[in-house]
Length: 344
Image (cartoon, rainbow, N blue to C red):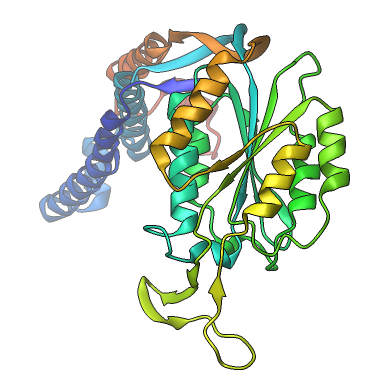
């Protein structure tokens, strides 16, 4: 594991190809000027030990040394050990309904955006608690495994949309079953599942899934978004409204929030049904709930003790520069003595 403290210094690496290009131009200019002065045979007699290969070798060694010095400016750091950190918290899984009915705008800006806002603000209130996110419509999918990285959770949350799920519907039963696999700490005594949905199209019976979740020590809370009056489902392209979803008869579909289903799930899950249209009230209730919950201690591992490694790059850089300074552009005598090419 490594870190780069000052990556902006990498911009200076552009000097490497620039200097090499300058060298080629100067080399070509020298050759051209020498040919004007005398022919090649006379030049070889005037400077018999001149080596073209050594000229190129010197510039390459110099540029490698310069590259090492530039990299040293970025101050590379290396993680030397994996440290176990003990934390206290609860395990929380959010199951977010991303069916197209969640795009209804009967609450501003729409049901899905309101649900994301609620989850995001709850995450902001958490301490060392672990969180996971599931999305579901016709099927349930893991969006984020359970983790203590709250920043990553918020990033993945913002990407959730109906297009991420292959089929429409509301597979609440599948979402609950998937949620039970998230709680991988057997010693955790407080496990919370928050289902955020409008409750529409929950046709399947979730009783068996809820019973198993409750048996596993999971308390299930439901947060309802939307209104019972309902609203149409907008069809948009690049943010521009093109119309509203219609049924087979050509009539505009009105989607309504169904509290009964969510109330039953919360009741069977030993949790509580919450109306989430008032964001702050919902957040305050969940925060109070989690603050009062007993915190279990768990362990996480992270790289620690990052040590500066720039000195190695400086050392190699200076080594190459010294080698360049000690290297002459003359042919190497011991290689000449070998007479590899049978020259007389």
